Length: 457
Image 1 (cartoon, rainbow, N blue to C red):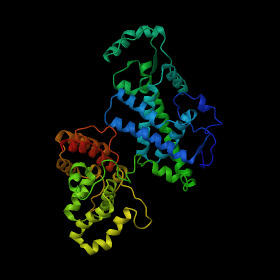
Image 2 (cartoon, rainbow, N blue to C red):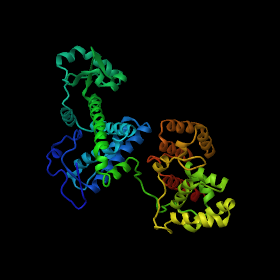
Image 3 (cartoon, rainbow, N blue to C red):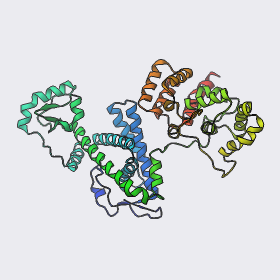
Image 4 (cartoon, rainbow, N blue to C red):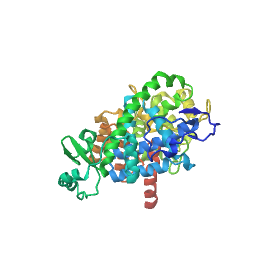
């Protein structure tokens, strides 16, 4: 792919007939000869990343196959649209190859991308009709043959036994089965969902997704290794002033609102702050708030994380200065506070220096931080010991069953999902979108709690 400047408005893939005649699901075997506008390079990738992260969240929550199919269908419909219908396929292809570049760079990134893209392929394949599925199979050029009528009759009873064990009707004479080496369909073998005879598995047409998904995963895994070699040997250096910064930032991109301005249910004053800290602050901010009250001081990382969060929930500059002054002056004195700390608070609100409107930290940024000795910022779900995390969750009022669910997610490094489960346990309501930002946690909490207060009043 060639990246062109925004002013170049030529039709993408205009010289390639492959995009029009390609199967419903591209196999992404090689990047087609196309030109991509720089603005589309990033925006298309972000839209696809929303799909993949939605799939990751759904899988982490243990959604069933039918729920995942509906989720993928909705995610694709919302995020992968294009104002020009003829460009939908182009967007699909471009976004995949951009993210392949983004996620080829480390083993962990490759593992995540491979898993999510394989899952996306699997569910998109299932949504195709039988004819489209066969078209995709032909594109893979698989060397497997359909079972003949004679062979089908000889194993019909065995196939029926497998079908009935899964609660399905016995196959009829017009059913199509493929005879493949059993190692090509490991998930069907592991789940005892296929008949095996003399080293071959007999795969029904409605199970063929397992076969093609295995092929897709193998193909993509090899491609990621090759892409990584190209990235490290030439692309990274050649594009260091243009594409490299975009590529390196995308893998840790926060995709939601920036909360630089307070939103509905997010407008607090000094008299409210102690109460809402207990009811609506996420654990990362509540820990900082409690430590500030306890020690009357926070290091720079903690001041930035908590200060920008408070700005995002609607604490105005005058109240912010009063809040920090009242705590810090107890330890460092009023004069030292005004000389060393007040400037940074005004700076965060865009009133000093370059007048930049700084935004609150997202979960991604907080999780990736590296607190040192004496620091209290960061993500408790990642940076706390198990003992300290359990104590903190208990202090918030999380019950024992919910706590075990949270700890299970922490052990599997699903830190944002652990925070989501904490939110659900404390509020007694599901958070389908998941927690992706501390200010989102606060806003969603206030939406639930404020109507209750208003009705009781």
